[in-house]
Length: 419
Image (cartoon, rainbow, N blue to C red; front, top):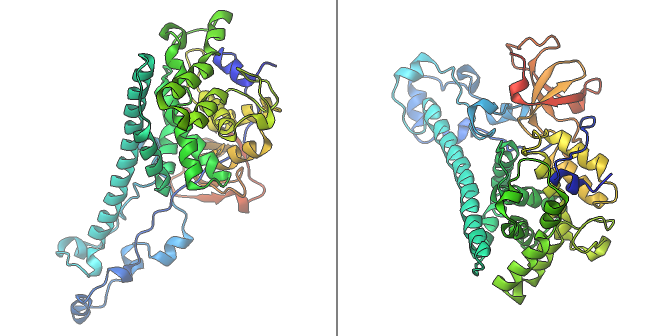
């Protein structure tokens, strides 16, 4: 079999194999009611007993620890978001009629709404960062294409901002994994690879400075593609041998662009860019490097470059589900990537990201609402359809780690759910 990334670039993607694995998710908790009480509470107590949390159907912090939470469905957003938690709907008539005062239990809906709006604001801010990455890469690629010098300072700043905000990388990951662009765009590809690479770097235990270096290298790893004619890059069909030979020159083009524009200070970056298509066993290009001859950043970028290419559509094929992309890499990449990178891919990128749809061996269908790096193949599932394909009317959460007789046999796109 030819080298995996070669097959992908030529439109010859390996057969899909059997299924498997996971991703993390942020949890949102409404503050404990007691924290919302102020000196006004004494006024309320003179009139009546404070309303208990369970009477108003508002989750207390202790009950929240016991309950499983659900993710917002794909139909609600361009990409799944857990930050838009739903405000409890069952509020007593008395609460609705009586004006709210700070410190009173009845003010909880307003307080909860503020918390949720703040989470939504943060989510939008993270999405805006994605757009800022796109603008940065547009400027850099345009400069490189016309042999103009450029700066990467803005890109470094954006990467650092993401790394310094733990929840940002998860929001950006969901946006990256669920985008459905058909036409190849090297800027979108670069952003997605950077997001995936940072998650892998976290799994490898990289320090902050290393994550920043890895992130900026991944962001511009394909800068050499700007020297390839658009008709070749955007060709809708299998590349000819001549066209593919031209594509294989982009790492060397990238090396020259980075070194000429940024100078010796960034020679390490130029080296990483030139090595992202090299492979562990010497199967890569342009120099056929192997093992320790390849910079580890380049190895990380190399594996997530393949993952990103598989999990998004190309003119010659449809996109693969995350678990299918992972299985292709695991089954087809012998000696191409170090085992520690394969393990990091399985645990940090996940075959079954939060909000992905899965089929169990019982034929029931559910949505992943929580993942567990210790058991990547056994996430927490919210059941949506029974074994006959009938939609469930009551919420049911299943922890696969605690139910050994149940396991995932398949995954599916939202559009393929039973109608």
